[in-house]
Length: 173
Length: 423
Image 1 (cartoon, each protein chain N blue to C red):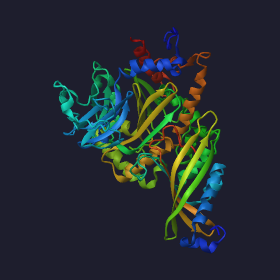
Image 2 (cartoon, each protein chain N blue to C red):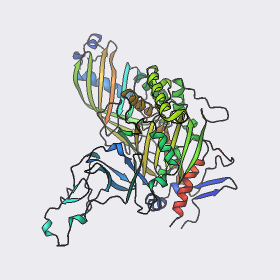
Image 3 (cartoon, helix red, strand yellow):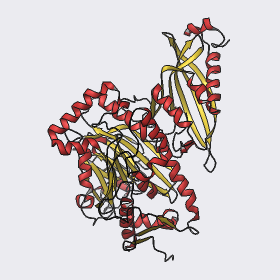
Image 4 (cartoon, rainbow over the protein chains, first blue to last red):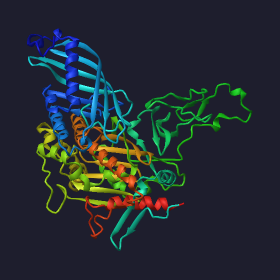
């Protein structure tokens, strides 16, 4: 039973199951792999954040540590607008990505929010570039709504000790 | 041998061409390691990164593993990270605080001052063996300017202060942001590779000619936020800026600000709430530095290249960027954010947020620079058939050179060429 299909369950965070969360994360991953960025934006709350901390400070706060990405919702929307522009040269032509999401766990549910972690492997391919494999885990804050789960916070934490040959994070990780 | 010159620099005929081999041939890199990196002052770190006795950072400086650390008295030291016994690195952590540097291979141990203090089974060495002869080796020269520490592997190199020449003034303008004169590296390091020759990042870091075409999406972002990004009449950019030769291969572009500065020029991206604090920062600058210098600190953006491989860009934020060749077509970049040590929590947060609007591997501009440099490097595989790059912008003028001209690029290359010509 998915959160999307059951508005009543959507109000009660404690009633959301791991399978509901997995369905949601797989759907999100498919949207990002398919570059359905406007559809992806619709999964975010009005105060959503998207963070990628620097590799050497994975548990820090963007107010006092330099991050790779620390977007609020306005910046996320600007990022999507940029990525849809043919002059976003780093993604023109676009990367092909394939995301593997696993080890999904609901860490706790309280105050109408779900705190979720999941492991990821994002394979990234571009013509003339080596395959790049971004490995790490996500920390999500998800909010059940009448329309289904929505993302209030999304943090992608990379395991590599530096970006190194992963290069730039020009796509949505 | 290849007799073709690295550059053709003919001022009378307003000609400057760069031999593309300099960016593509592995043999040139081998020569650079000896003639450039072993004969220059190479940036090693900022004093704020290590604070108390025993603090250390390990990093690559000029192709050597180095321990950048504070000794038992709190003085900054730069040790070569190699055991005097059989060569292993004695410190393999990226950062931390050490009581001892311990080589796990055979157990030789050094104190914070580099003295060899422990040798297991010392009685088996001949009588002339003396621990005092085997301290951790310091880099041949280590000096700092206003907290920026450099190492050199040339024991006879000129003092750092002389080497920096006109770049000192531009470091001063950065440090003058801080009321106490103390700037600090902010935690969080951006380390990323670019599959391109290291000198392409020198060029790119202060090449304003590329801004409009490479970074139109960033300009659109600024425009959407209410910043006026229309080019000024007669210019390619929204504001006037100049390129300057600072001596010894260092150069700068010095631009009137349009893009907003955490110190201290408000733009809408910072939010209405930020106005009073930015006004207060500006007032402090004026009181301390006087109106003219305060204007330079607050209302100019400066992209500074310190020869050969250090960039300090004081623009949307301050980024310190050093980069190293891995191969002729591959560099490793380390970038930090720099800010006044005493700035408020809100000013620090604004500085970091502003940094990410442009700079870094997830910013709205740097990834497109990376793409540009990698596109150049791929194109340079044709260097034997298409041997020359054109770098003569501005040579048709006497006097002021614009930030969109190429005087500053030529400045770097002239110094590079002179050092490569030496034996």
